[in-house]
Length: 514
Image 1 (cartoon, rainbow, N blue to C red):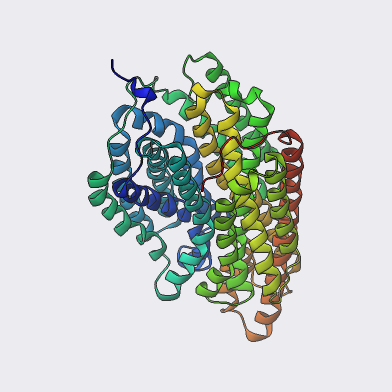
Image 2: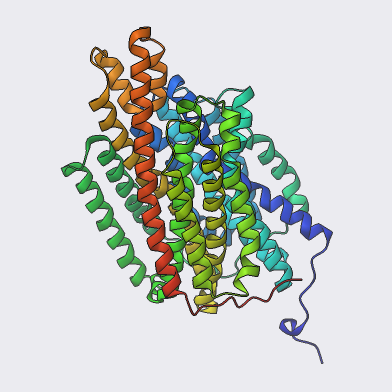
């Protein structure tokens, strides 16, 4: 009498499987780095491509918009054509888009290249996680593999400024994209040798309409915030935001009608699930928001090199990695709500410390704040994934994982869009009001767009005017940055309190791995 396959012990992973994990972790690390690496190049981009403040924001966060909007659809595509095949196709597309971004000759071309990078990245992330689940059959080994994957994902966004700083110290701004190319080529060579093919034998329908509604809703909301940041809160940004809400409502209605929806809206009936998703968004929102302002502050206001600016962000990256790896063990001793809530509270405290920065260097404050912010986000976002998967019915674990991944990328896009727009609006109004008399009109207009443009304009002013001009611009930027950080601290603190209360009885179901 034969033994049912379901009763056989899970096959333990060997050397080949752990090499496969290394191959699958690298593209996720690069994707996460790409979410923030461009922020390091902002001062030089502002000089070379002369983008407006709105274009600068789009350069940074359109990547996250397309990544978030297409993740679930690309996961569904991988189910059909094979996850390894989609990973290899996505690697080639990601490499090609990286070359276009590196040699972009205008702001518009760079925005297009970043959108293409987001589309390529959307094929990589769900494929890597699905293949990890297929490669590691033993539950304990799978948890360890996913923990490594998550640490790479969480740490990558913090490592982006460090990598960018090292490259910009020696090369032009396009080099922050070219680092992707050799890695993608290596993945195309090694991937077929160590990765098995995996696909869903009975995939659901392929719903393009839902994807278009989701991306449209995200873009409309971001357009609204960006327009408000540039022109103030008038009729146009309100129309954009209302349009985004309307598209989101249509998307939700469509998901309720579909037998196999793109996003299973019924999962949000669970309060712990909903709070965990929102906490996930808040964590990445915090990380990417600070990484938009910080490189400009260190390089332009403090006059440091790109490498030094990258090193200033290092505590953020180290904190995120340590927090992600330590989170499962901490969650064995406290409820998920307390651990996630305390993690977000730590991130809020980091933001509050950053709001104390001024035009003079305060390295101790910046390093302490970065470590608190990174560690808090690393802990919170790692465990929110556990809650999201753990509170969903077993037959909807895949749908829940897709929502978790989408929330992460959406948080990144919205962090830059909302906090960046708030900061840009405060900066522009402060610069216009404070510039010294006699400043040429064209210089005033350039300075009001970005601090990078203001820094370049200062070099062309007479010496008697340049000093007061630079002082005004620097104070305007720091005031806008710190007010934005304080606003973010309040938002993340509210998310922390919500997580503590809603998830206070939820505990990790996973045993500690020894």
